[in-house]
Length: 337
Image 1 (cartoon, rainbow, N blue to C red):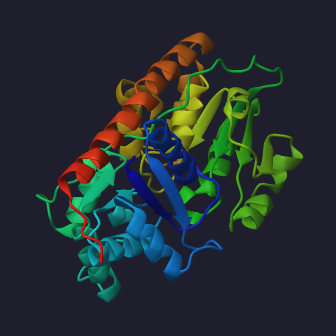
Image 2: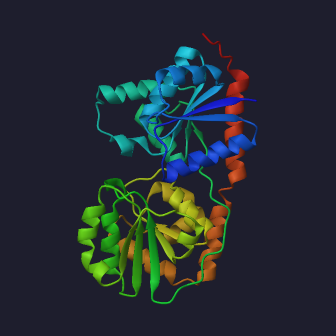
Image 3: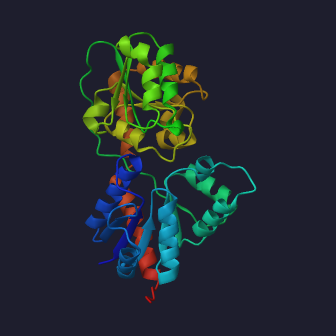
């Protein structure tokens, strides 16, 4: 039985944690022994890391930069193959200013010495290769999977329902949601699900919309199919995205997801991108695509959403990861200390 040590920063909620759990379960079903080590968890000590790494055939790093440092350097020290799973476009996350500081150069050194790099989208791969100044550096792409498609809830009376799920932080730009809602007719209502540092600012800025009954800031809730299915449309307006699970979850629930013209969303939506992404990066353009999309019949939107979800098959996701990791186990001969 091949053994994988999955190094993460912490346990929690959100798209990265969701897809990480899906990968862990998928590999377990394929016969892998997967042990997860959250570096900010109570059991994360150098002794436990060393002991678990000795027992592993492959080390996989995900969720921020600390796991990459730990997995790659431990892999080099213990002669184990290491994989870095890149979820977001690094140029956007880190900034593209040059010359890089010491921290950036150190991170580049680490990423170049990983045995394998896996990105969630072609856009993320381009960003990584450009940031590393290494177009010829091998980088694999495995798209995130969508949940099993389900039927949306029956429409409720009282207007058109929009939804958002995400961390209320600067990169998600929740303030644009309020601007968009203000540009739409009063029959439109918006529910914002999530928590984060911008929650107080959002509550203050949206006070009038809340009083009008058009805006609900719900806080953290389970992002499941019934939640998405209670909306007519899901919105994404982030400054950048890797390959957003919120969009895949919405599509699987039969609910179209519209966004600003993010490269990751255009890649994810495929043939629907022309209709479901805004013409430019503005609240006005997002409001226009919302109205245009909701003029199409609900069953047509549901059918098209399900088609995009089915294009992100969990079985293919599992097979791709299984093939990549099994290749490392077959070709890499660890020589433990």
